[in-house]
Image (cartoon, rainbow, N blue to C red):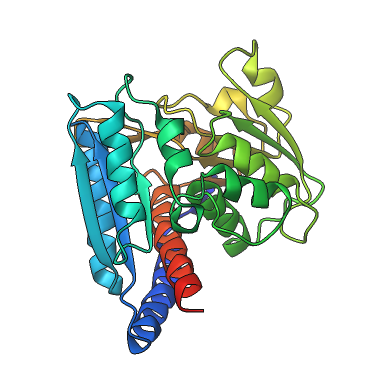
Length: 285
């Protein structure tokens, strides 16, 4: 029997419906919420992601703005783009699309963002609030995964979750969220990375496996135990085909598995717009 599939679409639709209502409320208060994106270089995948975010903004009544920083630019020009959005009163929140070309310092640019306008929830100030379990702008993909577990009534309390990938946009913040003491978390969390030998030893012990390293089909059916939950937080584009980190054959073993299309990614975009609304509400309150 094949695994039950976790689609992100109904979750994203629910979030975006609420975002649309909030955007309408803000407009009554004479505040048009605005999201900014900074696209660095000419990576077609990054361009695709940015386009999707602007299309989503249009469907819920959020104004959107973009600054493109050519690959030939300097770090100073990237920082100037950040400052432009920091100082733009029409932009409530903004983000830098990653990855950026190697000669740019992504972390320095993120630290330059006004924490109150941090759409991705990656500024050290907001990550610090997450660490202290205080309300703040949350990293979008980890927050989306938490929403997915909640929506499908998958309890992780006391369960063993293995995260493959320790990056700042997924693995590290997600490990904090999963291990927090609340009714939707309280799990034992193991974080793995590419330097770990015999990764399958750990993934076979997991009740829940989350993979976010951007290697297609990295986790296969031989690496997980029967009845597990398998969540792909990473994707790769091969031409126009989207390839998740979790192989389709995992569905032959797992109880739950994210869908190849419309999985965590669509919720991530919805959470980005939710953060934008939260940032805009902070300005009028």
